[in-house]
Amino acid sequence: MILLGTTTSPYTRKVRILLPASGRSHEFLDTRTEEGAALSAKAAPLGKVPVLVRDAPEPPLPDSSLIARWIWRVAEPALRGSGWDLDPADLDDRALQVVVEGALDAAINHRYLRLDGFSEKGYIAKQRHRVDRTLAWLDARAPRLERPYRGSMLSLGCTLDWLVFREVTELGRWPRLAAFRQAWIDSGLGAGTEPRE
Image 1: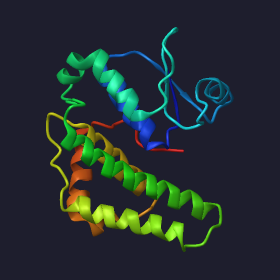
Image 2: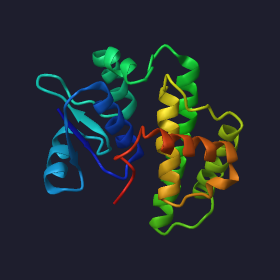
Image 3: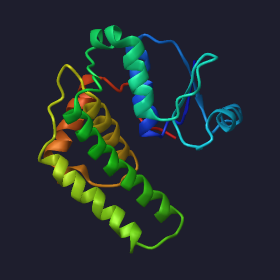
Image 4: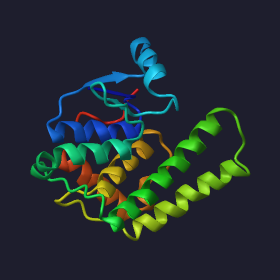
């Protein structure tokens, strides 16, 4: 099994955390390398990461939430033993995860459009506003990081680390989110997978 992604991607990071917790062996292949780019071109028509290339004849899985759901299906006992509960029937947790990842998507859009030289107006300004509004909303509802760890907690930890890594915002503006991030760091859940170039 091969996980295609990058060390900067918060979505790839979710899977990089879950696969070892599940006990599933895999190879991580960065899509910024020649080998990774070649395999990605074959396995990932969308051109996004992560993609989990499973053993034939199973088709690749092209999305972090889809990969997480598959890992839960094939390794639920191991994940529960590692402190995770990713029950797809938990709609409240899934709803919170969607909000977290919506803020992350807006931050990613904003960052890359600004890097491409677009000015802070129209759609780009709307993305910035969406990030700030959603972080304020999340700050009022930030979960405590405790077992069992849920999908929303995984997404929130990876998102907050990415926002700090990319200097998208000053996290001190949201004290409960800052406290969650500190608990996330202290827990060691993402140790060794921190975003890096």
